Length: 416
Length: 220
Image 1 (cartoon, helix red, strand yellow):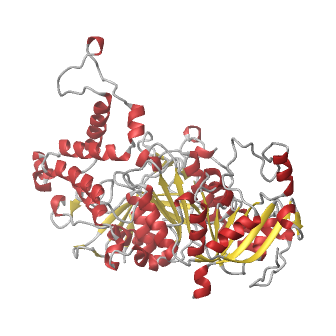
Image 2 (image 1 turned 120 degrees about the horizontal axis):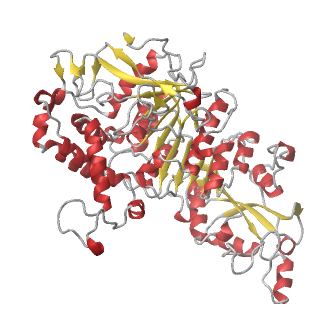
Image 3 (image 1 turned 135 degrees about the vertical axis):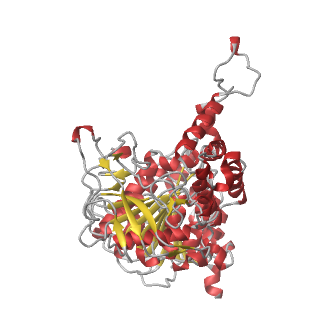
């Protein structure tokens, strides 16, 4: 297999290079730049299609030790990327999506662990996907980009591990869709995962979950600017559809409680003495918020990628090949497991995590499970709940002890 | 009280082998003696994971704990104990039949709403169960009631209106329930403070620790 690191520098060197230490906050990995790894060996996908070659965008933090035993792979959710922590060197206002979790002294402690963030195949932040150019045609893949599954991502990411010479990850970790990838890693490459950390996730979507994805997809597919997926060729993007898709998603990431406390029934610009305006413009604050989120999203996210990622979510069901028996699907796993769920997460409710816990216990796997009573819904996995971070920190410190990576040198971030 | 036949020899466990920060309580040491080395142990209401940590180090057990309290869960994770956060009142649905060799419920039975249910669940998931609870038959309790007061002491340091102890019982009361549920008691140890009580223990002990065998284990 041939791998080409497009950016300069040895692969195992930390990508974090503080430029001006005065502007790097305590606990941050500093300014970071992605590497683009090109894999020229064809990848056969679950659908049977073959991707002749592909590029994955990665960022790394911390240093890979001589034994290559301290690597952690972070898998991202629907709209995130390889930019997990720190400040983008080009655009420092871009902070990594899990910056509160990953950094020197944070729960995932880059003083001791070498952390890899990777942009999923098919996504739109530098990895090969529908928005990148198909070398065979010289035009964007668009609708012709093959559909992917979570297992395809694992196989694609395994080559990232090979590239860094990592035989076995200390941990593979992710939240939501990223948690599915972590779970799939433990099943697909059992000998390569020491600990598997699955947060606010599920072993399969419910009908309700699929239904929400379908609404989001219909919004995109029925946008006149979608043009059968080849909107790039027409110089347009289905921004309205993508925006509505994001609005639907956003509702499901938050709890009723949080939306009530953030917005309630507050009006955006009430008429004299609080009158309604009696039209379909933004009347309530929550509408304004959702429209803003949707429009912002539609400016940076690729519509085909949204379709592809939600479909991969729908398809994920490791138990399917075992007559629906999740315990049998997980029988191959060798990792130790940490699962975390949040009480108000109705997208992937605690029951989803408990099902995984039960299946793991049935297989006599070592499993730890925390059910955090937090108000923030599904989004809680990205936020700084102290108990949640304390569980993850304590768990990683245990991994470090087993791997002889030394004691924690500092505590920064949420738990400082 | 008749002497109880043990099915495994009681092996002395050194008290000094407990974690460096604090010596193990005498009742937990006794529980440890009743657990076979290398066996699978489930600790219900495992708190900060002290007992499991000890059992993993001294008895090389494969252990898991169940705990509801956030801070206890965090403390257990920090100790390297595998813990599952769950309310015991919801039962043990996460656990399969006969998944463990021994299941422990230490000083929690008296505060549970569904006393019978949890005992049945314990008997379902493990061959042996160990329960400890404050002995309401401890004679100063009677004295306290004769004086017109609910008993309050270091074993049960609660006023009647804020006590979590809703299902208090005596040794005989527990044995009756165990018999009704077909749990065969194999061991009993009783304590007052850090002292083991050997005679008139129904009156003189503050804390009772029972080990029982599940019905299926005898019919299997």
